[in-house]
Amino acid sequence: MSYTEQIVKSLQKNIESFKKEINVEEIGHVIEVGDGIARLSGLEKCQSQEMIEFPGGVFGVALNLEEETVGAIILGDFKNIKEGDVVKRTGKILSIPVGENIIGRVVNILGEAIDGKGDIKTKDFYPLEKVAKGVNTRERVSRPVQTGIKVVDALIPVGRGQRELIIGDRQTGKTALAIDAIINQKGQNMKCIYVAVGQKESKVARIVAKLEEAGAMNYTTVVVAGASEPAPMAYLAPYAGVAIAEYFADKGEDVLIIYDDLTKQAWAYREISLLLRRPPGREAYPGDVFYLHSRLLERACNLNKENGGGSITALPIIETQAGDISAYIPTNVISITDGQIFLETDLFFRGIRPALNVGLSVSRVGGDAQIKPMKKVAGSIKLALAQYRELEAFAQFAGDLDEDTKRQLARGERVVELMKQAQYSPMKVEDQVAVIFAVDHGYFDDIEVKEIQKIEKEFLRFFNSSKQDILEKIKKGVWDSEFENQLKDACEEFKKQ
Amino acid sequence: MSKLLPAQYAKILFNLTKDAKKDDLEDVIKNFFSFLKKEHVLKKADYIIKEFIKFSKKQEGIQEIEIISSAKISNEKIKEISKLFGEKTEVKTEIEPDIIGGLIIETDDTILDASVKTQLNKLKQHLL
Image 1 (cartoon, rainbow over the protein chains, first blue to last red):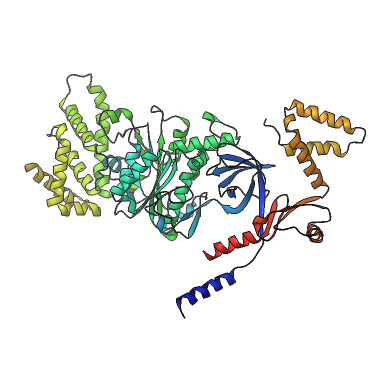
Image 2 (cartoon, rainbow over the protein chains, first blue to last red):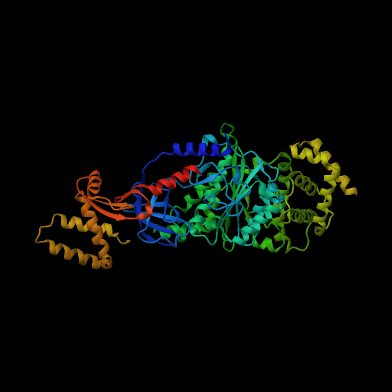
């Protein structure tokens, strides 16, 4: 059989299998259109969260089902929609196409590629809104997420399946921290999703370029609802992100998802709610703004073996105004998450970067997920830092200090200096343990504070070249008194050089 | 409180006039319009009347359908179709050559699409 005949045959077969049937569609009419929302009549059997088709291929989602009308948000250009237009039900709940191919791509909330690299071919659909996994499918957080940032991994550890809030004023390095965490996931068996909500397109472009440069786009998906897009997009973007995350988690993979940031999502939701005439509450947010974030963050999970053992770790970001963490949205999200990383402008300008306030930051569940060596060394520097903070203020006024206090101050200064870390330079966990061990046992006490970072580099070079076996052991989680002595000997050896 | 929709005003008007005697009718309507004036919705009167006609037809069991075809169809055919929708059916027809062939029937809240154009579109999707 020739090639042409084959084609004709298969075409014929295809056409024969096509069933003729009459299209029955339920319709409604547009009563009014506002910024990104529409009020519709008819559509009597419309479900909540159902997709609605407007003329011109624009889709909407039904949010308010009222006695006479349906309130819908419009996903796309609403300028050409006018009063009296016919709208159709689709019978589909809003969902996003997902698949392996979505990795390394930049998509909008409908899963369409916006990076100019062609269509994404996928088979599965995941709904944007889904009830979070139940108690019987979950397990306690026990495996670490290595962010590669010393101060976070040592003091505020994050476990797989945890929800850790990153909170701070503008320009304090919130996004930088999150991007560093993504970059460090290379080879850690982790899929990453970065959700940009209401961000400048230029910032998103910069982040994507940085991730590509660091080779992080091989395991990362970026979901974008830009600042120029209408509010419904920003409102739905985090749900689109978590739907993709759930696809991978259901396959037993570990996922890290970053929502940057939820403040803008709450603004977008407030805008939609006011336009849909829902009653405003505190700060004009609607009554269910808590549920907006809780149902999203509750979808982070650490699944047990029977359910594939996947996990979704969420790092939501909240931007505060003038350090006010007691505003409405920050307090809400703090109460939902398993801890927060608090970044401060003051520290940032004092040159302490990441500008992390150790006193106000906590991780409620991550401690169990730390590897043993890190847990051992982190405990005592936490104490050293706490003592340092207490003495610091006091020492400014006192002239004479006893030896003990001086020693504590000196140690504290060195720990603070060591915790500084440049952007885009994540550090391996074994390296972190080694340097923290050294400073904790006073090996850096006789070194000028200014020199600390230089010495740190030399120290790591020394360990990585001649003490590979020790680093290997740390990575495996070995820690006993014998090993501690071995580590001490190695530090002595370094000092002699 | 937000204003009512034209359809809701129409419902009120229908309920008011339903049981009114012929002599009272004028008063009832006068009252209704002064109510509309008080509510500042007189400018929507046109819509309300339109909705009222629609609503009262629905109450009486009259159904409006619109038949869209590519060419003129005979009166017998129209009668045959309208009978399928019940005894009391009001039919509007429209000719739209765009649909190539077949019929589209629109009722108040559904579209029955049996046009050749839609079938072809479906076939296209099926083959791709």
